[in-house]
Image: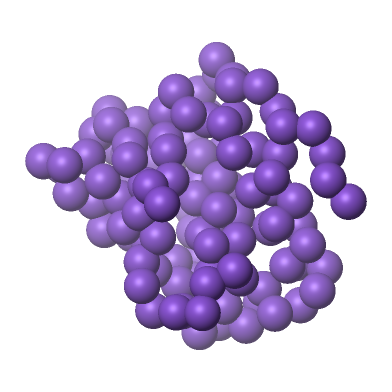
Length: 114
């Protein structure tokens, strides 16, 4: 069940980027054999700061974020609870479909580094 890839958005929203980080991280770990290596994103400090300052942090539960200002890279690791949640087939499918449809959606603000 694959949908079309969504076009790049002009709208910046910290909560939407938090959800992007969550689901792209989940999709990465679902398809990866190594569940300990962090997922890395490229994100400018101004956008990362807005995510960090966002009063709603629920999408980031179960994730540890580490930001390197110099390289403008965000490393994200998931805890065991987070990983277990995505063992559920429905959650897994949501994450995989999200990755497929949103691959380029937020490129103006954040990009996953492969």
